[in-house]
Length: 290
Ligand code: FAD
Image 1 (tube, helix red, strand yellow):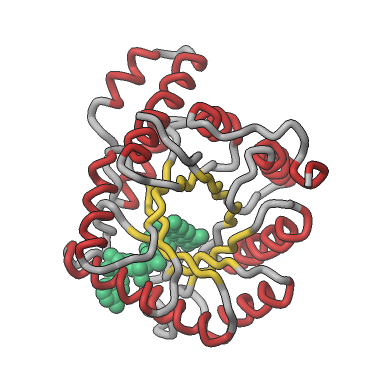
Image 2 (cartoon, protein in one colour):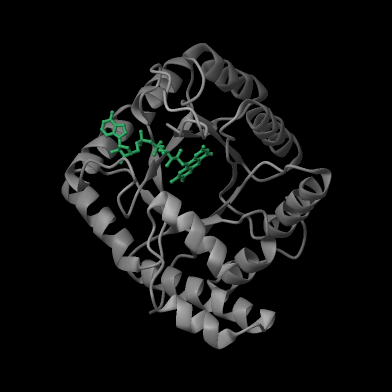
């Protein structure tokens, strides 16, 4: 199918845990920069020291990269004052975009502080302190805490009504998962855009392991397909590109205008997938081309 407007892309990164990972992160961002993404996002760790690395890295990305930065922020595991202090720090540095999440209690801690029992309360609190552009999470397949699809839709509506501008989804592999959510949200009167989150299958075993934890379904057909690619890294890579491109093309045919990639801090797959989907690779780095 022919499309009039090019797809928009955004890319998510996680905080580096070593100097080597930090170098890889900056290299990755540099490579993706030429695609002129809508924004980069930096996830927020579940524990104290990881949270500090997230904030420091987000602030460095905001200062050093020409690409707009969305900082993730979670409410779980901290009191309201601490969470809002981070929001004010980001605000003071000029970061306007926040991905507001409930988050999860760190492993081994059952009790979650009640200041932000869900992302709804965090979005509302952020709205009270500044004019943030807020994104929230949405789940094409039920979140492990889901009390049912109708309930989840109502919860998503409450996050949007509290002041979020859009939702970004958990990753999924079958287009119908996303389309069901998008269509149900539209029927429920949720007008905010829902941006699909796409995870390229860099390593099938690892993807299966994440997916068990977050409730995403890995299609049964992936096993035989990757088995057929065998131990040949190039064949596995081509397969990962093909699966993601096929998924994104179907989404585009269904009217999706923007894709959010979970990069796992690796550029190659996301770069090749974005290029196959028509992203324009600027001849010069973004800042010098401006
Ligand atoms: P919520 O939207 O508040 O709730 C999630 C689920 O629980 C929904 O099914 C909802 O219906 C149900 N629920 C919860 N509370 C209620 C309630 N009071 N009433 C009714 N239903 C309720 N985690 C991190 O730690 N750091 C990150 O940076 C991060 N980034 C993410 C980015 C995206 C795009 C996504 C999709 C997830 C991300 N996560 C991150 C994971 C997220 O923190 C977890 O999935 C967490 O368990 C839920 O957070 P949430 O904001 O979706 O919660």
